[in-house]
Amino acid sequence: MKEIKTIVENLKIASSQGIKTALASVVNVYGSSYRRTGARMLIREDGFWFGSVSGGCLEGDVITKAKEVIKSGLTTLYTYDTRQNAKNAFGMGYGCNGLLEILIEPIVFDKNNDSYSILNSLLSWQGYQGLSTVFYSEDNQIASLGQRYHSNGKGSIDNGELVNLVSQDLKKAIDANESANTNYKLNGKKVKVFHEVFQPNLNILIYGAVFHVVPFLRIANELGYNVHVTDSFEPIQPIWNFPNADEISLIDGDEVSKLIERTPNLAVVFLTHNFFYIKEELPKVLKADAPYIGILGSRKKTQKILREAEVNEHNFTDAELAKIHYPIGLDIGANTPEEIALSIIAEIRAFFSNKTGEPLKKFEGAIHN
Image (cartoon, rainbow, N blue to C red; front, side, top):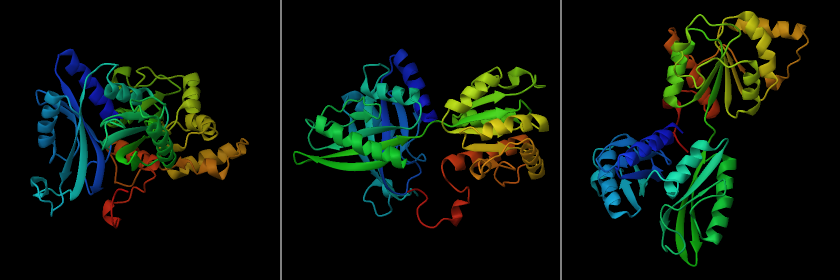
């Protein structure tokens, strides 16, 4: 979501300055590509751009094409073939070895503009959501390039039959948590639609306003994650050392309870070294729905906390205990606060992406589905 947020913010700035803009979206990928479907890029008529659609090899031409779209006002689909045997300039010297289809459309910061309205909906929606985009149509009377349908039931696709088909397939994509492309045939005419799935943004609740929180917040903020900090006592660190938390002041117990109860994709991280604080709060978190719980420190410390919890008649199920990651983080040889933060955030990302965290060199075949 961070890329979309950046695009919307800079779209607002450009519109306030009277600068015209276009939105480029990767809607189909065949083979290997640095960016996958759903990658986006905002291009201003003065050549400034935000986001990306490739590893840098296509951006120059996309900017040129976007300027043409801005002048014509016509949404256009462009194909880039970076395979070695491709008979065009993009097959020369580029290592992606794939074919990309990129939809470029005019966009303005206006609630009446369908493209902006949809992007804004993506930012405000909680939980899993989906977006279907028409990127090919043999008949504009059936569907036009850039028409969309959001999982909230809103959108610009006005063909009832197509809306019915798209809504069903978008729901299937959301249920499978996997984006997909679908070809439709209505009145003998082909329409291609990209169904895009968006996971809830990662939320991280940190117990412990300690020194290790500072680099943790910086890295998480760069990734666009929502971070919340709580502690049982006034921290030694002054509050201005926590500039990247969504809540500048520490959240209290009532707010913590609401966060745990209502927030999807929540990772709970104990960075505090206070044994008694962890001992008091861990049973509450284990009984909640938070799928990931990580504890900084030795294995022995956590095991001792769990033993004492049993003595105090906290009977945890195997499923609850399986949620605990201790010691927290991936094995990268982390030593400094920054390295430890990187190790922890990498494990959290791998967990919620249902990935192993193994080196990619161990994989055979394609990295992406």
